[in-house]
Image (cartoon, rainbow, N blue to C red):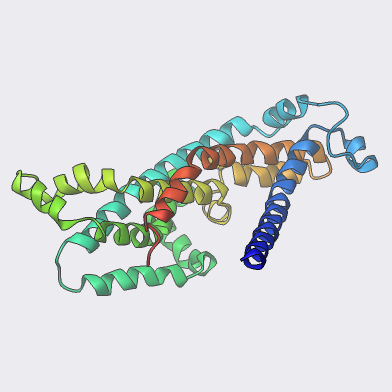
Length: 279
């Protein structure tokens, strides 16, 4: 008994030590980026201290004004909000149809849709570019938003379908008896019950759209329409040797994602625990 308990304690301690090391290895680059953004150029190259001797908050103001981050930041907010809303609304409708409605060949269409997850994004650049050019959507906000929505639908449908399939049929039948339409059952019952899965989908798409770079690089040429990640490339080309300003720009781009994740991390855990990620 004592030997087994001691062994379990040692395993738990070792597990916690490994997890702490992994967590520190993930957090340290973010901490170093933030700390470097408050240093001077000389301090970064001559001193190895983790915290800056003098907290130069002016680096953020200079980076914001020089790089026109206000414009890029607003563009990213627009793209993220519109893209996430489109993915959640369309994928939830499709997932509910695949899970609860009877139609011929729905499994075939579902697996064909899911198979698009195997196609890497760079593999569709050429046809996507030609399609957007033919439709007059190249170098437009609408074209980029539509690409973000289409890129997130397959995963969103895969995520939500399994959740909708687990909803008790008795709830749906009771709502239909009370006079609810199929869309009413989806809107008033299925969506509210799927909040953990929806929150997981929102967070994943917020992270992917906010951090997306390649599509914006291919589709957009007008600097007034570029998101913050694309704007960082322009800023880096101008201030590649000014590391404090570069780190300040990277921190500005990172903070919103961290805030969203910290505010909604419990929903990710709840979504996973409730079976939202079952295949």
